[in-house]
Every structure is written in C-alpha cells, then in structure tokens.
Length: 494
Image (cartoon, rainbow, N blue to C red; front, side):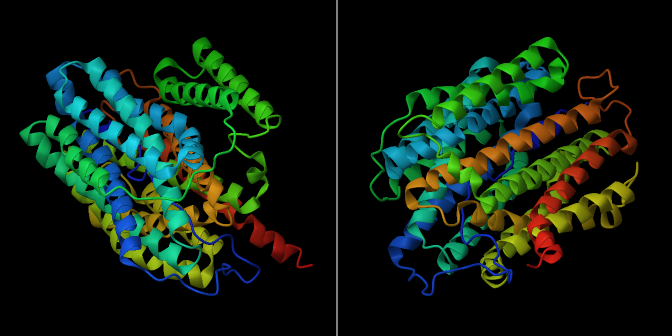
C-alpha cells in the first residue's frame, strides 16, 4: 500500500495577510480615499515576501511527495512518516500567536531574518541526516521557524501597504506565489524524488538564502512590556493541543492519555486567558476577539483550510491507493485548482474593492461547498475524471482563489500597525489548528473499521463517504457563519 496519502497534511499556504474589512450595509468595503504609489522599494519588499510564500508552498508539497522514498531508505513506518509532516504542523501551529506578537514587540525585520536563517539551516540539516528521529526533529524546528516567518511576513505586508486598493493588490499577488509554490512543489517533488529524496529538502535552501540577502526593512518595534507568563501558558497549551489533535487518530480519541492531554491543554489555555486579563502588557489583547468581522474571518479560515486540506487528503488516498495513480499523475490531476488560484488571485483585490470581503467569502465557501457536493454524489469506484473529479477541482480552485485573500483581508482590517503581527498570527493559528482538527477527524472517519496501516486496504469509494460528508459539512457551516450578519440585516432591517 502506498503512503503518499500523507502528502497534504498542511497547505501551501502558511503565510498571508489582510486588507479591507467586513462589508458595510451596502456590501462594499471601506477604503481610503487615496491609493498608494507603488515605488521600487514597495515592489522589492513584496518580492521578498512573495519569495518566502513561494518557498513555504514549495517545501511542504515537495516533502510530502517524497515520503515513500524516505520511508524506504530510512526504514520508517507509516506512523513515523506522518510525523515528518505532523512535526512541522506541531511547531508551526503551536507558536504562531507568539511568533506574530514577538514580531510586533521586537521588530519585524529582525524576527523575520532570524527565523528565516533557522528555516534554512533546518532545511539543510534535513537533507543531510540519516536518522529518522533527527529528520523529524529538523521538521519540528522548521515549523517553529515558520511560526515566526509567516505572521511576520504578513504583518510586514500589511504595515507596508496601506489598507485599501494597494493592500488588496499586494495580497492578490502574494496569493499567486503561494499557489504557484505548492503546485510547482507537487511536480518538482515527483521529479526530484526520482533523483533522491534529499533534494526535496535541499532545494529550498538557496531560496531562503536569497530572501535573507534581500530581507525587508520595517518600522520600529513596539517596545511595550513582555508577558512572560502569558507566553509560557500560551505556547505550552498550544503545543499540547496541536500534539493531541494530530496524535489522537493513532492513539484513539477516547484513550485516557488523549483525554488527559486535551484537559491539560484546556487548563493551560484557560490560564493564559486569565493572565491576559490581568497583566499590564498582555501578549494578546483579548478585546480583538470582540470584533465580529475578525472572529468571523478566523472561523471562515477554519472552514476553508479544514475542508480544503481534508478533501485533498481524501483525494490523495483515493487516487493513488485505490485507483492506482502515480504521484505525478495525482499532482497533474489536482493541478487545475492551483492554476486557477495562480491566475485568478491577481483579480481578487479588485473584486474585494467592488463587493467587500464578506460577499467574497460567501462566494468562496459556496463554490467550495458545491465542489465537495459534486464529488460526493458523482464519485464512484471508477470515476470518470472529466465528469466526477475535474468539476470539483475547478470549483475548489475558484473557492480558494476568492476566499484566501478575502479572509486574510478581513482578519487584519482595521487593526493598528502595532498589532498586525497579532492579527496575522491569530488567523494563521486558526487556519493551522482548525485544519489539523478537521483533518484528524476526517482521517479517523476514513480509516474507521480498517485493520491496515493505511486504512484503505480493499477499499472503494464508500470508504470515503463519511469523510466527504464531514468535509462538506464544515464548508457549509463556515458559509452559514459568514452569511449570518447579512441574514440578520434582512430579517431585522431596523
């Protein structure tokens, strides 16, 4: 049985940012009256940030494709191989909020360059080691580094480009590189793995060095107080929560250790909220969670990432382990979605200007929901690609292209420059932790009742039905949350 199915545990999109906020009563966003001139300096900053975005997507998808070869050479089991991906998720999801706030407090350029240096070194180490434990450790360190580069890159973008058309345009270009990196990584991963899996780890190194040389400059940091107790409770609580989520399917959701870990993580996070309400300089200003548009954006990103990644996970298993497609065939089959995002994202900024983020997110989640529903009803044990798979892939591409930039825009709109790192870290934490939870539940449903390591021995399309229902339900729930303010205005016009 193939184990390539673990290749899409996290999305290409680890970094992104924001623009205008929630729709007004007319559905349009409020933007400044004047646009921002695009100087060579602005283009240079955007180029570096886009390079890091491309690097993130490239690295994630290339490593995923290489997993079977890594397992063969290093003698790793399927469970151990999954931790090459989950180790990254653990480090990334556990420290995102701290990473974003650290950039606000210590200086974005400084944090960005230090974290990028660690990212490059971890990539180099991962390509040279001959031990599975060290390889997983390097992935964890890489995730920690990305937890600082991702929100820092977003906050650099949102503080460099003024809220409105300029930021919308920058975000659209930013999104293109994320999709291009991920799509390119799927193809390059298949090609490089044939030459040796180590090249999939080593290839990002020169990209990281190039980004370091051209590292962006930023504004002065906020020199407010440091919330050490808050940072300790948040990091420990988030790390334990993410670890419990990604390990629960293998250990069992009702296992005493799983339940105990969830309880301890909840206690640590509850302590964090108590601390934040009492310290003079909180790590996270909790009042930001009272802004309805920001809360809805964070819930929308859970629906977008959670459903999208889980569907890709299902398709990866189904296409390779059930239908017998090769990794390259699978990558080409899913490639249209990445192409749509790459070529469609540059126009999303203009659509946000015209219609507002709320309506764009509604359109995105509607497209995603239709894509999942299509495959749910059109899929079969021997599906015709053009009839059952391609329409879903196209709808998902449209949904992600519209939703990614729009959600990031809404999540950081109206936030002061001193807290852009916090807002960026918050939405990315929601994306990664939410996606990990939905993916863990999907994996449990897909492998339920199976006694094999991969959970798909002798399976047909029916094996994936419950997982597809969950994915569809998550997207529909996100759509309902997003549309609820518009429904309230319609029902209560006063």
